[in-house]
Length: 311
Image (tube, rainbow, N blue to C red; front, side):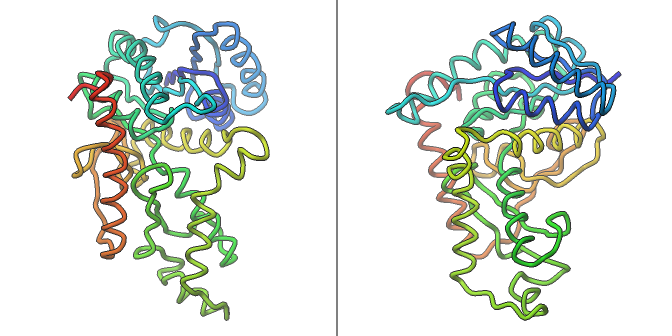
């Protein structure tokens, strides 16, 4: 029996659990939340869907029940208050993680921990500092951003996003780096592929795609207050790679040559991140990635100064 626990049953946690149950990725799915009634209700609702789709056993419980989990997803945290600074939000979420992670370490020390709480790169670092096996901790990184990038290129080219190779690196946020140097459709650059179907491709087109990728969350939030289906599917895909030891290359967030967690192409398997890769970037992309790391380091330093991040 393969057990997965999801901690936090807000929009992201519940959507992740639903995606896991619908696809039958695990056999036993546990939901944990500070609001026990919420966790119980979400578990019941998802269980009814699983009865139709997969037969996964879905239930709610407490931290003592996460024992035996192969993977634990952390989707717990608080939302940003009106007028609240990014650092203040980080500080509050770091405090929450200081109560969650030690319980994970006690009850399921060998579980691979996947962080989905935003800002995910910094929260991945927070989790790593609290875990005695930091190599077993990874964040969702830019897996969702990469999916958005491929989706938009698919719409431009008329090719399924599943057959487009293109990645977003760096921060899951405004400083993310769309890696055009290696973006390919059928082994061709985006521009060369579009030329085969008599479509022009200019720098303005690339900029338009970049703005849509970075602005996707804001557009969705403006219409329905939150994003959750996309990240839920991304979480399920990462969990699947761990449970199946599939050695999938995914832009999850993990420790990097920059000395902090950010998204790079990483090989994901049963131990978490098995191998980290640094693609050959253009000079401009390399500068952008360094800038992204610098942005994250500023937030990291703020937590260190507030005593919320150990080094």
